[in-house]
Each structure stands twice: as C-alpha cells, then as structure tokens.
Image 1: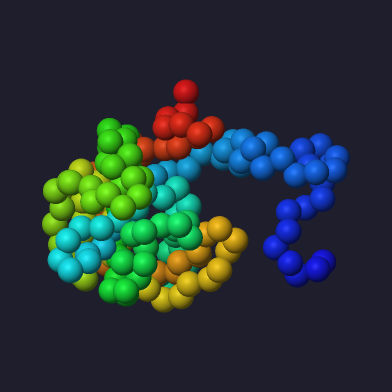
Image 2: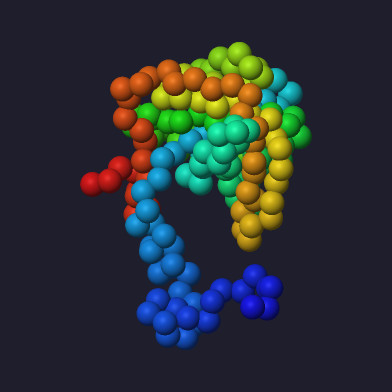
Length: 171
C-alpha cells in the first residue's frame, strides 16, 4: 500500500484500468435514503441533499454525513457548528431536488428545532439536531461527525424517499 489516494489498478473484472462510471454504477446497487442537512446562515435557511448518512453511535449519540467538497452550503453550515439532518418522506422528491441545486436557497417551510434552533423541514419523517464534532477528509467528500443534541420521529408510518441506481425509488 502506497498511502496515496489512487484508484485500484483493477477495473471492473480485475483487468487493468479504472472505469469510474462502472464503479459508480456498481455502488448504485445499494439503495439509500435521502436526507437534507439544514442550517442557518445569517438567519436564512441553507442546506444540501445527501444520501451518505448513517447513525454512527448510540453512546454517545453520533451521526455521520458526507457533503461533497464542492458543496457551497456545507461551509456556511459548518461555520455555525450546528445542523439538522432531515429524513425525507417519499413524496418529498421536489424538496430533495431543490436542495441539490448548488448555490440555490430552497424555499420550504420549516420550524426551529427545540434542542438547537436548527431547521426542521415541514413534512419530514424524522430529524436529528446536531453539533459538529469532527470532520475527516475522504477523497472528493468530507466525512462529518455530528453529536446528536435532539431528535424526533414525526411521521412513524410514512415511507422514506429512497435513491437507487441513480434515480429516486426502487422500481
């Protein structure tokens, strides 16, 4: 191992060369949920859609989310040290798409979370209000660790918005 961030020498079937598109397609076989990481910048809603989200630890309660390094929203959220992870419902595809637009401010109703005042978006299934605990470099993304300050399930029976094979839904 060289320690450098280089793609493996083996391609799709162990051959030589690296096929980034094939790699992305292979990883797309894993179905993920969709969240919006939201924060406030000068009192205004800012956020980004993400599929790379996981509950990391129960004790202490930690989550991880991975914004892309090209994100224009994450630096603005990072500066406050607090954010809210909003778990989107199946019918919130438009919300995901609105937060996926770089540099755009999505227009959606929200309320301040009770633990931190960070934005809890209307219609979400659940949320976790977090304080920034750590960041780790990870190629073209950053692994963000958040300490959960408060959480709630708002819609126990709602179906989640999922992303699979490069599209919303599983079928």
